[in-house]
Image (cartoon, rainbow, N blue to C red; front, side):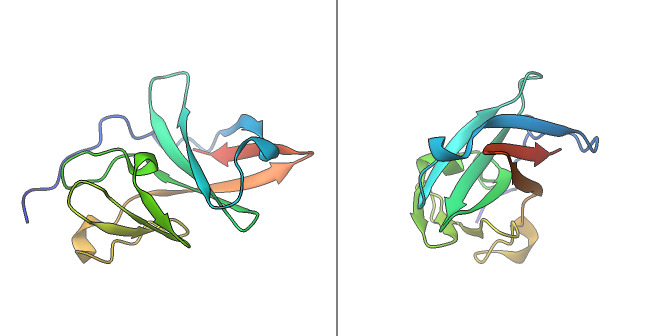
Amino acid sequence: MGKHRENKRKPKREGKTITVGKAESVPPGRGATVKLKDGTEVALYNINGAFHAIEHFCPHKGYPLVDSRLYGHIVECDLHAYRFDVRTGECFTKKSCSIERYDVFVDEGFIKIVV
């Protein structure tokens, strides 16, 4: 199935909480690309009012996951159909391809991600 691609735009874990926008800006069943000040990116999803954040790029060929189809809590990469659980980062296609997930919470209507 090809080699894994290193995601050079994955945020480094620093334990920082970053406010990324208003909760109402990401409707249920949708995703959004979150570009951080340092040029890194995460994919943010609203699944029935619960927010989840994962690496933005598929480790197989680097396709942006927010641009892919969302089926409930599963995002399927449009390029080669790798499937990921947006709640955990688990890859269902190939276990060794699981991706990072980031804690997300809403505080006074604002989405915050811990990176």
